Amino acid sequence: ETAVFQTPNYHVTQVGNEVSFNCKQTLGHDTMYWYKQDSKKLLKIMFSYNNKQLIVNETVPRRFSPQSSDKAHLNLRIKSVEPEDSAVYLCASSLDRANTGQLYFGEGSKLTVL
Amino acid sequence: GDSVTQKQGQVTLSEDDFLFINCTYSTTTYPTLLWYVQYLGQGPQLLLKVTTANNKGISRGFEATYDKGTTSFHLQKASVQESDSAVYFCALVRAGNTGKLIFGLGTTLQVQP
Image 1: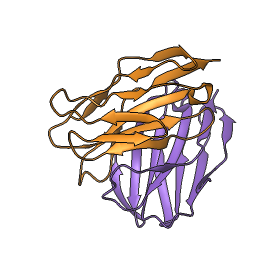
Image 2: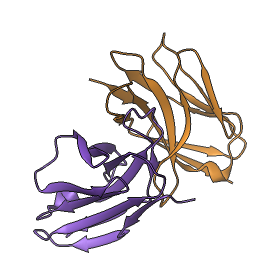
Image 3: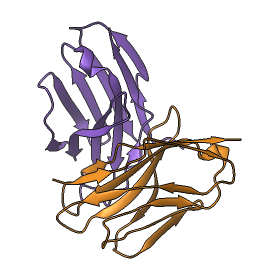
């Protein structure tokens, strides 16, 4: 049963354009994440929010900016996309920031940059 | 820094074969160890986790033992089915580390009928 919803599922765009991905979780969790999964399936955390507060900000280009309006929503904006941004962006949530490892992932948003 | 190593990029088996996926980890503290599974077109989902050294996690016929001595957390299943075809990720999380999971590179399992 899906409880982390991502839109859009696919997006194709050209270099230099702006892209936004939206994520909503209906689990009542306090913490949400954005992970990037590249073409080799490597999963790397980008950002983490706890109750709308940024708690993890990995080394990510400045063109990436997360936005959280409330603890159930976490969006990701990419200003001026580059070819290396082509990947699947996975949103996830966990009960709280302590997180014993139980993450609930969405189905992903696949970005293709031409 | 923390790291997780999965040496096998791809494993191909036939139905009813025994599955073994290698996983070793490196960290300075006592982590929680996990296996996630990702089916085609879906996000990863937790398969099993173990928080205490020397304990075993079991789920859906899969099992893994947290071996602090060899810093390993290998995944096993006695008899695989075609529906087990997926990518398997070993991961660790350190307590209090803002919940950041460190994933291995993943092992793609293909089970032939």
